[in-house]
Image (cartoon, rainbow, N blue to C red; front, side, top):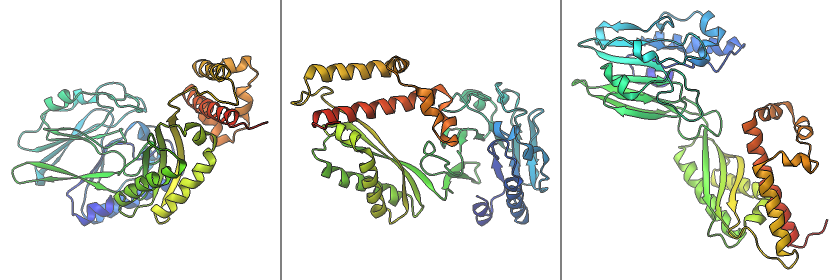
Length: 380
């Protein structure tokens, strides 16, 4: 981002909060930021910054000395910085704590007459999935301020909420995991002589996370899967413009191969990894293969197992999915399994949502594996 700002000789840079991800104790992270801010200063580029929910909890935010080209907006109240030579007014307010539930935008000052007015705000706007509802606000409320541009932070997904005036979540500059897919970067805003604004997205990510969804409903044999997967991976690789990729592959659809896929997951994981090496010239890493397929018949008669027995087995799995506590009644000790996990995985299952999701996936796999082996005549 700093390279881009210097190359394009921008007039200033805005960061709408969450510069640091939580209360990091390693000050090298903060020192890196100070070094980059100093590069902007050497190029004569001011930097305007507000604290978000993560910054508010971070000691580095409060203790690191910043170069004099950095303006850090106070958390006490919204205030305005005037750039007289540009006829620009920048309005902003930082988070005072890690949880701000009030609409901060209500107290932002009215637009300065004759200036280009910019609002710098950390907010969940009118609510976004997977993000805490901090400093909620409405588009209509932002419009009433009369600003020309609102630069919003907190939401990691890029989104243009409005173009009259511009209200934009630029997202983060680098995806961190599979829930942050697609190009990540910033917006470069051009102000024309007639005060018309133009916002252009510029990708900055050095590694890209992507989801490859492969529809397998028309697959008749396992040989049909390879060209479908390869095609999706090649399309993603071309769009990445040379960046390395971390890709999750999801196979979706109702297919008669459902149970075979479920039963041989590790095999198909390795097959897809091989396809990725070819499609991406070594630049694609398969993060995970998820099977979202279903059996179109659900219950299929078999010469090896009575149909009534299969129906009863499926019913048992359905009941356990609906009420996982039933596993205790059949002697399954969930906590003992969790204790065997490595620490980095164990913490993921302390929250009920992760545990439920994991349990559902395991039950689906177990159901498919058992039916496949019973119907194929496998003996134990």
